[in-house]
Image (cartoon, rainbow, N blue to C red; front, top):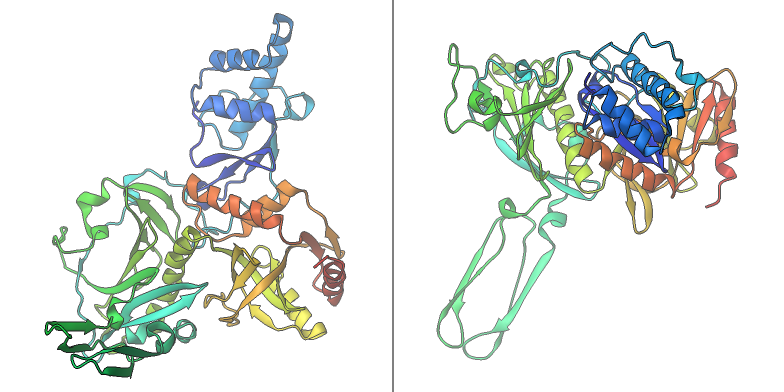
Length: 511
């Protein structure tokens, strides 16, 4: 037997959980809550899968005497059977164990009722291929052409999202209205008027004033009092340091050419792809990695098949197919695919900076953003609309909200990505709380235990959980967040009574 990969033992408020990451999330695997015995045995399984060795470790752990060994053996068999039943062991030699876990003292496993996570590109249709199958790497690799349509030009636009400055180098036609709504004004980027004062050779003062809003560089030459020349240079727009640099380039299909030139991006080199590890694969997204970079391929994309981001989160690149577009450039399909691919890169970068995205609709109530979170189809948009109809509360974002815990408290930052709602804002607000929705026949609020708050909040994040390290970042954030805001689960109908129930609960919270 062998323990399943892509599961991580995590402690939430001192309670052990086995939680999926990477391919396990893509495959829609559920997490499990353990007790101390289960956590001990799972840790032991990482070192040995020999049944007798596991039993010896368990006996030593509990200082068991000979009369207790038969009971410990029963508990071990029950635990291994349950792991197999949940797909966490690769063999079935314990599947027919007669011992029911519910009826013995080592009640080690509890199946979690909720889906594993929203943290993939679109995980609804899982893929069962092995995450280390070499076939997961991109194939039919084209070479790169930086050519753009004759009537187009590459432009660099700087966006400001969640306080992060992102420069995107791409054909101007690929920026949609939502992205442009977050474009930073030139005066904010390059500064206001400058004032240069000094002394001329004769000792009289000089005063040079100008404006740098255009971003173009200038050079001032003259003579100092000693007679030597001096140079004064400003910083041009292209040299401004941004938090995330993104380039968008076109691909040119080369018929029959299986190799790529040395100047092509590394994602397109077959010799390099053979040394990458595949972290996850589903019909929407494949993620592989090497020591320095995450690589993306989008199997269902029509015009933007590849991307990559450095593991430091400071640079990203995406590649689109220009061949065949001709006069149709840019197509709406390409603009849409780029828009969502940029989200993937930004969310990884944001996670590195302590910013996390949660799948939720948001409203503004009493000067704070309140988030309604749940699975697709759970009623987030319906609930937000009910609040707008009943209480005239503005809607901030219809699908996604960016959160951070700051010295001033938890904050919600506007983002251009909002699902199909078309509702977004570029403003920042204090976070009031998060309401986790669950459809029911009655309307009532359920108070949650600390570990449940951390878990359920993390399951609603769409920040990456491709690896155990990234999953841990998400959990640390939600564990920190749950202590600073009200969090509850609203069992709700789709009637106005659901909004009334929620408002009554919110109004009772201390501010």
